[in-house]
Length: 215
Length: 214
Image (cartoon, rainbow over all chains, first blue to last red; front, side, top):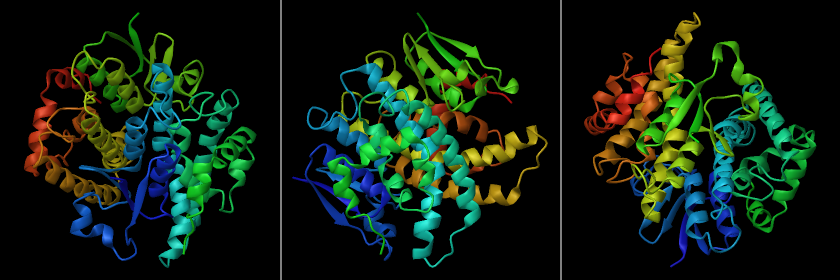
């Protein structure tokens, strides 16, 4: 029975899971959730994710939420096939992947997601983007990407000279960011720019990017 | 050669790692970092964590940062000794532990850290707590804890029947939170309260939290 992923093809967190599934060549069915109609706050959805957010993954009798837990599960369950996203045969490499997964989660994401929310999402909800929030987070993001610039000048990808889940988890927010007026924050940093051009040209990323349009 | 942890015993993120090390029964050396003088923002510390934050861990030639990554590494490397913190023999239980570890990192940590910053950290720098901000964050935390209350009415620990990193990761912030006037957010929710009583009285928790004083 194929895996079911509940979410939407333009949702950042849903697409994080979709890219991972494509990288591992795992068959799945995308089950649309009517976010604008509030389906994710209804009891039937809350039974799957009590926090009322997408995505949710159903694999037989296993139901998971939190996109990074989902990508971690998919990478682990299918570790013997497709791209080796977690370096499972090398404890040191696996540990470095975990470090940069946390960096994305704890340091990169809090700086980039408010920018995406203000610039892309707020207008869809009839609100004006708050430039003060955007400016403050652009400054934070710049400092984070300075560290990335330094790291990526010594290794090709974040955890080492191999593509991993640490790079993949950056995909959705960065994809939208590069369509914002501030893509220069990435493009002005040559190693970050090269890294982004490399990972965003992967077939799995290009496939998922096709569905990532608002409205 | 013993594991080295660079950090501070009163730091929540350092304590998160110390709890894991002790649950696994691993020998380690805690090397204090002089935060007041900004040692963590300079070399040589920056070569261990380019983001200039504690803790960092050195295990032979492996050098790591981010407390939650460090714990996942330790739990996996030493899965056969001490407490089994990642349910390593079951993919499904391990996936549930990962899910609730993400919940801690994304849903729980933000509001509780904001509250502790207002109530405990800001006064240390002569900044008055912002009551409105505290109220906003307490409301967010309350909604998260309502989900926990429901979850913990169905199973003993967050990931299921067994104690895991998903529970452990909450401990350091809660040690401080329970000393504030807001502790009733926990004590007023019977299943959350019972869970906290359980995990806070584990010998390892008692030992590490004894050094967590500000």
